[in-house]
Length: 328
Image 1 (tube, helix red, strand yellow):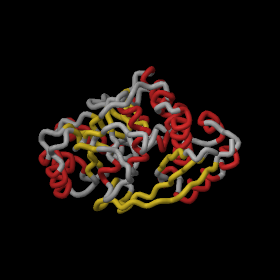
Image 2 (cartoon, helix red, strand yellow):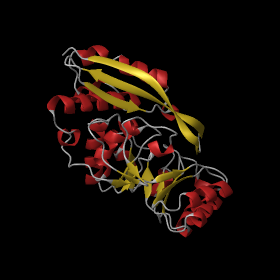
Image 3 (spheres, helix red, strand yellow):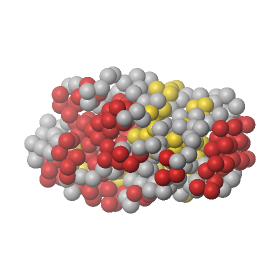
């Protein structure tokens, strides 16, 4: 096959700071995988390593490069499913191989994936965790956006969500607790979300400590994020969750994500297509699933001070499908 695999660590500044329950950061550090064939065609894929899952940019880069011989010998995307674990490294390599395959065949990636052509989609816009006053101000500044995703952090969340609703009275709201709630605060937090008209709650309890969700009446649909990576985790979600957040960096690439979406739908779960904070290159493969989802959260590039060129085209919260010069 004579394909060459490379991987590089890249940094993109965030506009301001991005803060969730686990901490704050001012830049997105990503890993770029490229696969070049003998004719000089290049496939690219981007991932965002996540410390929550024990990943570092260096470890992810090294996991990608460890597949250099296999890629040179012709390893396929489906081969990766058995030789690499789900996670950021497999995502970058899977997406690079997808991009290369599209270029080699002269066919769009969505067609190769067995999907319908991607369409424009409305993304959620994320409000970082802060005190109620700052979050109300951020909500007011973003109040023209139709869908806001509110990062929460545990103590004080009822006040935060009420403040956001004051700042953005007409926006649809989803909230993401990033595992920060506990059994003793769940009822009060749910009540605050009901009062604010929240329509979806992501990962309220820690993964592995979410059994309580099966025993309560859920007045708002609950979406699994950290509790689910790939298809292997679906059984454990039974009766606990109403929706799942599919992120390519968790699933380990578009190949697995497409199969996960199909199986989750068959089991009755609603779908969110989500992301880490990365560039348009990381969002582009996920856009192939966006119009199959109930919620789209692919605002990573909107949170950056600069993006790649070429990049996805955003009109407010509306995302246009990727062009072939970006990916796929």
